[in-house]
Image (tube, rainbow, N blue to C red; front, side, top):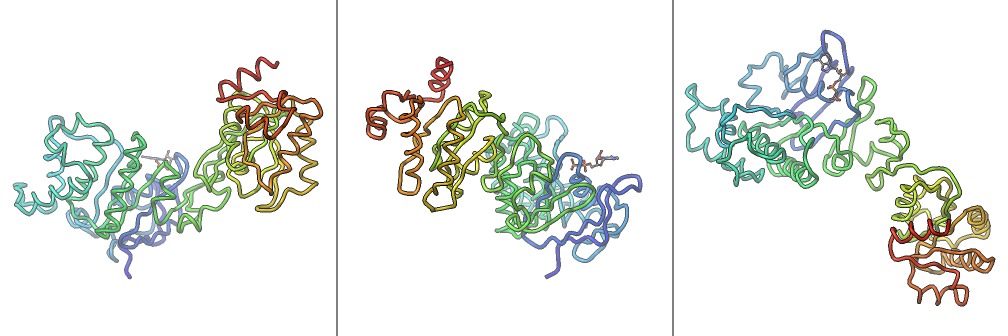
Length: 399
Ligand code: ADP
C-alpha cells in the first residue's frame, strides 16, 4: 500500500540549518502517529515541514508519491489540513462561519455554500461533538471547545491527512481524552491519517498506533508504543531527574529522600498511598518484603531508598526475611500498611510480630479488632490510624 505521506532524505530546520536530520516517515491510511520528545526537540518543525508551511532544508515530503513542493495550495488543502495550537479567528465569527471557511478549497470564488457543503459542515460538527455551540462566537468558547471546532474545521476540508501541533495543550483531562478519541474515530471510521505532537505521554502511548521519539536532532526510534517504549526510554527521552517514569503505569513517581525514618510493610497495593504520602512529608523510607509482580513494588522502587523484594508468587525466603528485619531494625518507625496476609507473604506478619515482641511500637492502618486477631496481646503496642492525616499526627506526637 502507498503511504499517504512519506519523506525522502528529509532534513528539517530553519535558515538552511537542520534541526532534525534524516526524518524517516511512512504514514499509512488510518494511522494515528504521534511525535514525542522534550520541548524544543523539533516536533513542531517536523509537523510544519510535513504540512508544507516550512520548506525542507534538504530532501522532500511526498504526498501520495507527489513532491509537496510541486503541488498547488488548493490541492494540498484537499489532501491535508493543519491544526495549530493557538487558534486565532476574526472576532465576531461564529463557529459555523469559521468552519465554513474550511470549505474554501471546494467552494466557488464567491465562497457560496451548496447543500452538500452544509451537510459536510453539519457532519463535521457532529463528529467532534460541537453541534451544540455552532451559533456561538468562536472567541467566547473554552479552550476545549475551540480545539474541537478547529478539528471540525480541518475535517470539512475532507482531508486524507490531518496534522495537529499539540492539540491537547491547555485542555483539562476530559477534553484531552475527547480530542484523542475524536482522532481515533477519524482514523478508524474514515481512514483519515492523523499526525500530531502530544505532551501527554500516557495518552499518546495508549491512544496512538505509532510513536516517533524525537531527541538530540534526530528521530531516535519509531514504531508501536509497546515495541518502542521499553523500561527507561521515557526517562531518557525527557532526561527526567529526581523522579522515575513508570512505563507500566504511565505515571511519574517523585523520588523520596534517602534515610531510615520509616520501614513500611506492603503488599497487594496496600503500600502505594503510604509511600507517596510519607515521602511527600519528607520521611526517608524503606520497604519490604514486596513481591516483584505487586504494584507496591513498582512504586516503592521509585520512591523508597531501599526495598527488599521477592520473586513473583514465591514464598518469602529466609534471606529476604533477614534483610527486611535489618531494615526494620534500622528504621525509627514501623508502619503496617494493612496488607492481606497469605501463605506467600506470611513472613511479613512474622516480622511485625517479632518487632512487637522486641518492644517496638507499630503504626497500623488496620482496625483494632484485626490487630488484636493478628498480634494477640502485643496489639497494645500497635497504634491504629484510619487516615494518612491521623498517621502524620500520631508519628509527630511520637517524636
Ligand atoms: P518542539 O515542537 O519539539 O518544542 P520546535 O520544533 O518548536 O520544538 O523547535 C525546535 C528547535 O528549532 C528549537 O531549538 C527552536 O528554538 C528552533 N526554532 C523554532 N522555530 C524557529 C524559527 N522560526 N527560526 C529558527 N529556529 C527556530
